Image (cartoon, rainbow, N blue to C red; front, side, top):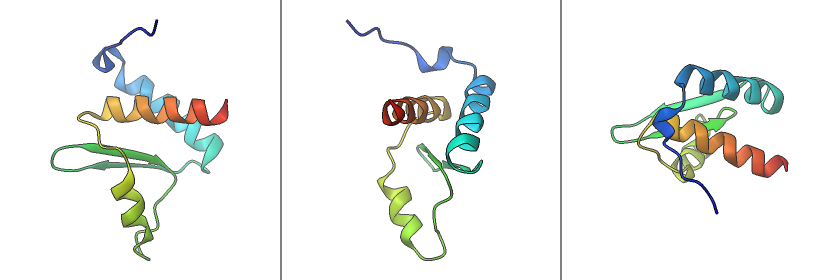
Length: 83
Protein backbone atom coordinates (compact mmCIF):
# COMPACT_ATOMS: atom_id res chain seq x y z
CA UNK A 1 0.00 0.00 0.00
CA UNK A 2 1.38 3.38 -1.00
CA UNK A 3 1.55 5.99 1.74
CA UNK A 4 0.41 9.53 1.08
CA UNK A 5 2.65 12.39 2.12
CA UNK A 6 2.28 16.13 2.52
CA UNK A 7 4.65 17.97 0.15
CA UNK A 8 4.61 20.93 2.50
CA UNK A 9 6.33 18.81 5.16
CA UNK A 10 9.51 18.83 3.04
CA UNK A 11 12.16 21.50 3.54
CA UNK A 12 12.35 23.73 0.45
CA UNK A 13 16.08 24.44 0.88
CA UNK A 14 16.84 20.70 1.02
CA UNK A 15 14.67 20.02 -2.03
CA UNK A 16 16.53 22.73 -3.96
CA UNK A 17 19.91 21.31 -2.95
CA UNK A 18 18.92 17.81 -4.06
CA UNK A 19 17.49 19.13 -7.33
CA UNK A 20 20.63 21.20 -7.99
CA UNK A 21 22.77 18.09 -7.45
CA UNK A 22 20.55 16.16 -9.88
CA UNK A 23 20.83 19.00 -12.41
CA UNK A 24 24.62 18.96 -12.11
CA UNK A 25 24.65 15.22 -12.80
CA UNK A 26 22.12 15.20 -15.65
CA UNK A 27 21.93 18.59 -17.37
CA UNK A 28 25.30 20.29 -16.88
CA UNK A 29 23.85 22.10 -13.87
CA UNK A 30 20.95 23.67 -15.75
CA UNK A 31 17.67 23.85 -13.85
CA UNK A 32 14.74 26.01 -14.97
CA UNK A 33 12.03 27.10 -12.54
CA UNK A 34 8.95 28.90 -13.83
CA UNK A 35 6.36 30.72 -11.73
CA UNK A 36 3.14 31.53 -13.53
CA UNK A 37 0.05 33.29 -12.21
CA UNK A 38 -1.53 30.13 -10.83
CA UNK A 39 1.18 27.48 -10.87
CA UNK A 40 4.84 26.39 -10.95
CA UNK A 41 6.75 24.32 -13.50
CA UNK A 42 10.31 22.96 -13.30
CA UNK A 43 12.60 21.20 -15.76
CA UNK A 44 16.16 19.98 -15.79
CA UNK A 45 17.94 21.83 -18.56
CA UNK A 46 17.18 25.06 -20.39
CA UNK A 47 14.26 25.21 -22.84
CA UNK A 48 15.10 26.75 -26.24
CA UNK A 49 12.94 29.86 -25.91
CA UNK A 50 14.65 31.65 -28.83
CA UNK A 51 13.48 29.17 -31.47
CA UNK A 52 10.00 28.85 -30.01
CA UNK A 53 10.45 25.11 -29.41
CA UNK A 54 10.99 25.81 -25.72
CA UNK A 55 7.56 27.39 -25.36
CA UNK A 56 5.96 24.12 -26.45
CA UNK A 57 8.24 22.20 -24.09
CA UNK A 58 7.20 24.45 -21.19
CA UNK A 59 3.52 24.22 -22.15
CA UNK A 60 3.71 20.41 -21.91
CA UNK A 61 5.16 20.46 -18.39
CA UNK A 62 2.80 19.45 -15.62
CA UNK A 63 1.70 22.44 -13.48
CA UNK A 64 1.87 22.41 -9.68
CA UNK A 65 0.33 24.68 -7.06
CA UNK A 66 3.58 24.94 -5.09
CA UNK A 67 7.28 24.92 -5.89
CA UNK A 68 7.74 22.08 -3.41
CA UNK A 69 5.24 19.89 -5.30
CA UNK A 70 6.97 20.66 -8.60
CA UNK A 71 10.43 19.80 -7.24
CA UNK A 72 9.24 16.59 -5.58
CA UNK A 73 7.57 15.45 -8.81
CA UNK A 74 10.70 16.25 -10.84
CA UNK A 75 12.87 14.22 -8.45
CA UNK A 76 10.44 11.30 -8.49
CA UNK A 77 10.20 11.32 -12.30
CA UNK A 78 14.00 11.43 -12.65
CA UNK A 79 14.37 8.57 -10.15
CA UNK A 80 11.90 6.45 -12.11
CA UNK A 81 13.59 7.34 -15.41
CA UNK A 82 17.02 6.32 -14.03
CA UNK A 83 15.77 3.08 -12.44
